[in-house]
Image 1: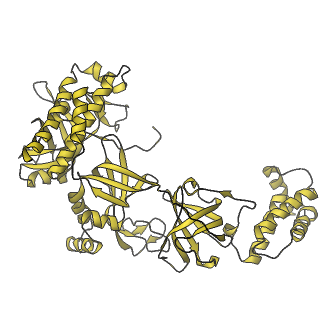
Image 2: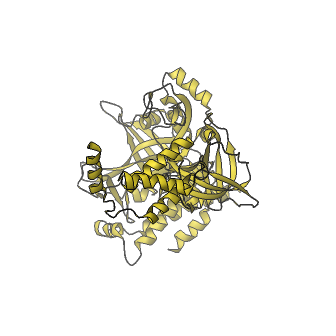
Length: 332
Length: 196
């Protein structure tokens, strides 16, 4: 009886169709569900339709609820997570630079630009994919049991899911992803920006920092605490969050550990020694400020949210063309 | 004003123009709203970036340390900068530096009125670093270029908000700031000629 009540209220609020479900509607639903599972579970459209029919026409369950129930049944059967499931039907074929939402199911054609060392056993492969429009990080889970991608090869990747972390997008390959090698070459586009100007500020959170050691969590600790995992034993890292200012615009820049070491000449080991001697990590950022603030740099790298990641940089030692500016100044 | 506050650009301006920027204003009534000085070439400045020769430092504080630094641009015009207990890093730089030295300063323009009713403009430093001559030279070219751009905008037929404000608030011809840009650039050229 209670079930009946909740069902009625559901009908009223969800605005589900008042019309009795026709057979063709159920057949369409069944076809869609079948397509979602056809690679993983050995089922026929008729079996799916029969299950839906029982729920909808015998038990009077709303279609959306019936569909959910059937999908869950097959998920259990296949040992899959709901997240592993595609939206059904064809995905949008996307260019890498057009990836701008998390949790979208898309198809991409891309070249494996780089393979990185996987940080944990859960990750089978991690690296960089690229097409004409730019590059994007990818992750392939071990449990998805997919064939390995080779660096330098071009693939059609269907059913990958987009993800986002701190404004940076990535794609995840999963159990439903199909990988097809293509016999073609892709000229990987350069999505990096170049900024030039004076380094006018080094922001807090720069210098010697500690990151959360939890799997796939690289959050910077605040007073030994990770905002996600609480109090943890952090691992040391170096970075600089800086501001480049050309007198017209400001750009926020992130130097990762390698770039920070190159920029400042202070290695992670040295930084840890400095902090140990001073019993204070802030001496590292102070020393970095002295070495780099107020100088001119050219920085090249991809844009991540509001930051430019300093993949390449150089200090600008020689002045710009003073002759050209002098001619301009004299002519006005 | 729903978006997060964006960082203020550091303007490049020679000392002759900077010291004339005596008019200050805010864009809103909020107590925390940024204060701008109005550059006579018609641009608002809440931050400046200056590279020049530190020629003299002096503790002018009475009860506590309050350091004054004189920084000279290629035209021989002087920026004054003051750092006290609330700018500990900049204050200790001024305490420790031996003039003369090329320095770069990022800071906020501040104005104060003297007993004689004159308005003085100075820089409250956020950071001071010692730099080499190449960095100084690069700044000179950059400051000249930004100055020329401002003067060009000033002379356009339909002046923007801050150009109009400068025309209303000041009676200062932009010609002297153009001259400052030209002569600063000429010092670089002379240096080049003399070393060749």
